Image 1 (tube, rainbow, N blue to C red):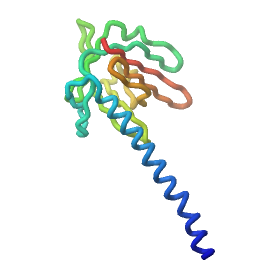
Image 2 (image 1 turned 180 degrees about the vertical axis):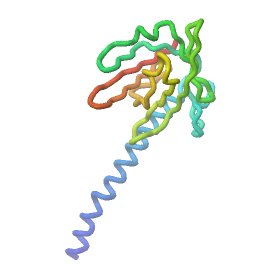
Image 3 (image 1 turned 90 degrees about the vertical axis):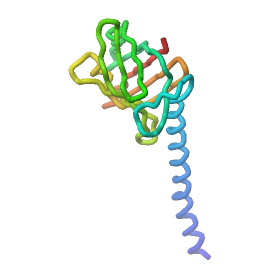
Length: 156
């Protein structure tokens, strides 16, 4: 009987941690699917998951890198997240193409943005953690080497 009690006590933390991990994964997946729903028209995000994103144009209202506000670099640019996983950025005269997708990494909802490494938008290349998403705001952050960068898109 004593052995059975000790064995049961040993298994309790194992099964308890599984439930905690499942809950964290469910939260991350819910956050990722929240980014991909809302006022959408069914556009897929380029991944095979069938997720959708809000349609229309977005602008950057905050971009802080290494503690320095660099939002003004993106003034006048409109970002459109296409159904193919393409992100098209334009300011009326210049158009730049990149790629985007949502994913879950380390149990956190992420938005991966990738541009050609030879242009202004290279600074946005990252797998951003999704902090907030609704019909008008996508708020992202990235922490590397103790430095937190912030990126916020606002619906136009």
